Image (cartoon, rainbow, N blue to C red):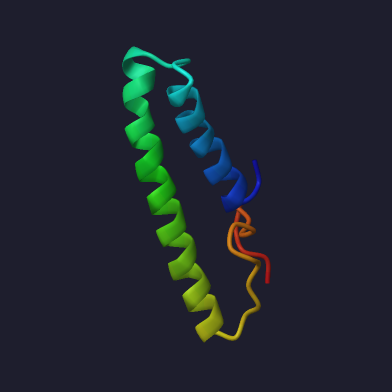
Length: 72
């Protein structure tokens, strides 16, 4: 998992497992945490992209930002 899009896809997979009744107990309650993390990830990426645009730095497409830092 190297990009924000890959992170969100993996988090969203939790919803599919919950829908298919493959999760129970603490794992099922963890789906709420997945939803929160998806929202945080999108918000953080949008803020970072806005700052980069202000600085005149080209941005990856939404979901393409590297998780290990921003290449300039």
